[in-house]
Image (cartoon, rainbow, N blue to C red; front, top):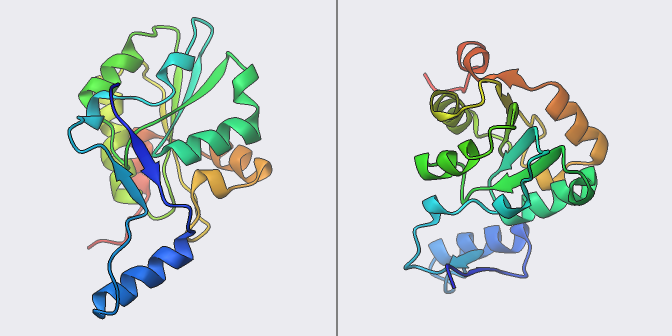
Length: 179
């Protein structure tokens, strides 16, 4: 076994309320995720084994549930041309980029993080551009508040991917609200 992951069955609203109650000293904190602690997740790229020699487009999301939902909504399980992989959190490591670089056929990478991750998208988009064989790294921006890629409808996913911006241009033109 390489690693294990677990996720609470309770929804975001419950966990947000639990955190508020925990901070007020009213209850114990229940984590939304609990992963194996002795694993270097920066060396694992979820869904990597689904990439084939026919895969030309790759979507990178930040968690297994986003991947599952993106796969389902875009029909990617039966599509060798486009695949979705996931990292653990809104970051990508050099080790994960090395895995992607093993597939010379990938011509475009879409970085598709949650709403409100502009700073992380800028950093990781440029890091991917610098460390990838693929020179078309595009950053997708979800503009619906508190939405994850997995929460979007098929039409919204297609729109977000279609409106993606090249990583360098994204860094120069999108404001992250931090002065």
